[in-house]
Each structure stands twice: as structure tokens, then as C-alpha cells.
Length: 226
Ligand SMILES: Nc1ncnc2c1ncn2[C@@H]1O[C@@H]2COP(=O)(O)O[C@H]2[C@H]1O
Image (cartoon, rainbow, N blue to C red; front, side):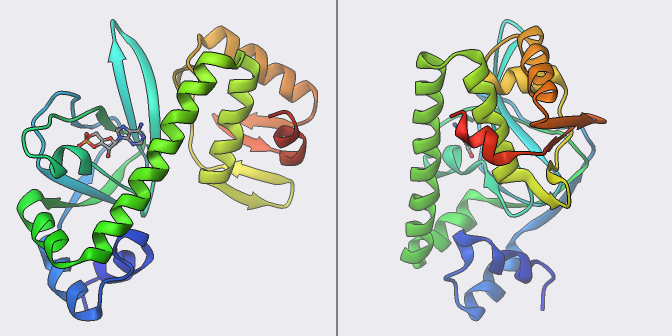
């Protein structure tokens, strides 16, 4: 059995495929390894590959005049690059860059489309994830329009804890190393404002930071703020 099959079985997108379908699709993926800081593709590139992360972290962002907004962070079991692939001729909607050494499986458009044509369940799962990402993008628009920096920072940290958190005896550790600048690029503000909010939250004993990793000590207090 291919070593990819256990990963595919854990990814909601592929979880309805039969054992035979998994056996057919798994050899079509190509395993790739990337160093930290590798650009996988740029916004605007032509794209015909789908990426499934085996390990590591990838940031999805847009940049304008050296100002960056991070749209999402993806980790093991997450996929990206499906948008340009679904519609031939659509360019990449954002840039993808590894935040850590990353291992991913890639699949070319023709193979993926063949599978979509054969598997309505795969299409439904793809729609579910796309709808969830749209819901989150709507929330980001709302937050950027109506919330102040502290509320946006709190929401971002709660989301990081929910999506990248590892339970520890003294709280939830966000399992991604992020600089204040990268957090600012997720929140849509400047580094100085993030430093100020993080300082306040540390003084309130809600979180602590060690080697660029956030440990949320009181997630309930953080949730109560949003
Ligand atoms: N707002 C977003 N939230 C989550 N993922 C996104 C968002 N925008 C783009 N992406 C992902 O980033 C990828 C960039 O390349 P694609 O447009 O091919 O496919 C895109 C999606 O997989």
C-alpha cells in the first residue's frame, strides 16, 4: 500500500473515495520537499497543480508595495492551489511560501479533473471546504472593516490556537513560529501595534511567548473578548 493512502484517508476531501479509488489516485501524486522560505508559486502565475501538505507549514498571502496580508496558514492534511486548477486559465489568486521545511504531494490538473468527473462525493467535499474558506474570507472582510486592532489580534490568536494548537498542561501552544511582523500581516496592522497588544495580553496572564511561539494560557478569557 502506498504510504500516501493513510494521509489521503485522513483528509476530508478524499475520505469518501473507495479503497480502489485511493489505490488509483495515490500513484498520480508526486512527492516534493521544500526548504523553509521557498516560494511555491506567485500570485498571477499560471497554475495547474494542486498541493496537499504532508508536513510543514505554508503561508498564503498577497503583497502590494511590500505590504503583505496573510490570508491563511496551511499545515499537514490541508490542501491549496485548487482555485487556478478548477478553472483553466485562471491565474494563481495568491502567493504560496513555506514557513518551515515542508513536504507536499502535488497532482496535476488533468489527473485531478478526471477524478472530479468520476467522483461526485469528491466534488461535494471540495465545495464544502471552498464554502468554509469563503465564510472565513467574509469574516476577514468584516473584521478588517469593523473591528479595532486589539479585537482583530485576539480573534487571530484564537483562530491560531484552534487551527494550529497543541494541548499542553499549562495551555494551548500554537505550533507555528511567527514573528510580530508576520502576526501583523495576518491581522492587517503594523508590527508596533501587535507588539503592544501581545504585551498587554502577557501582562493579563492570558498568554506567554517563547521563541516566537504563543502559549495561550487562558483560552476562555481570550474567547470571551470576541
Ligand atoms: N482567502 C483564502 N483563504 C484560504 N485559502 C486561500 C484564500 N485565497 C486563496 N487561497 C488558496 O491559495 C491558493 C493560491 O493559488 P490558487 O488560486 O490556485 O488556489 C488558492 C487557494 O488554494
